Length: 278
Image (tube, rainbow, N blue to C red; front, side, top):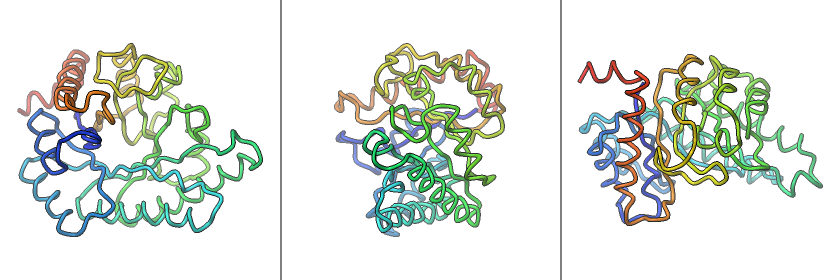
């Protein structure tokens, strides 16, 4: 497996966007996931592509969150879907492999508006995005979220959602930190065998979505990683560290996450091929 980093780790810090690309490589990560600025122009994307190519830092995924896909207002849903399509277009230019989508949460605690209606909006949107992505030879990854009213927040809802979308390029993104917050044991991951497109990694205390570096919390990262491998996944594990409570120390956080995760993955013999090739 390879170890990557989502460049949203620099959110809220003083690390400038393009400088952050260099720092991710300097720390030692193999790949990068791009959380782009929606205002980026063609020359900004070219700069990202040129920097990453010069650093030998492959761009794996385009990442963003448009929970408005399940809005009650049709024009808002359309804006969210079209925004994601723009990210797919950016990803084609950047040679990314996938688009990560976040479905959002049921409004009003599932009252007033029937949950099935919002679920239907999400399925409809994901199907349209998957069809568009397929034309671009890209996948769509659905993130499992750790919040009470998230549409997809456990293995049951992930299985059902992927089945309802029913597109071969619509796959699960398994966020190990989110599983821990939800109290989902590692053994449950096997239910998604053959359906895992991506993996996010961070640590937490089991009660809050902390996004800590590996080892700072009590998540069973080793157990989760083993079960991800047992489920047939051998792609990129991307570290997700957003909105650090200590933004002035974010570089140290990102480096710590790399060091501790790399060490753990080597102990589990998940990075031997990379070590040999180097």
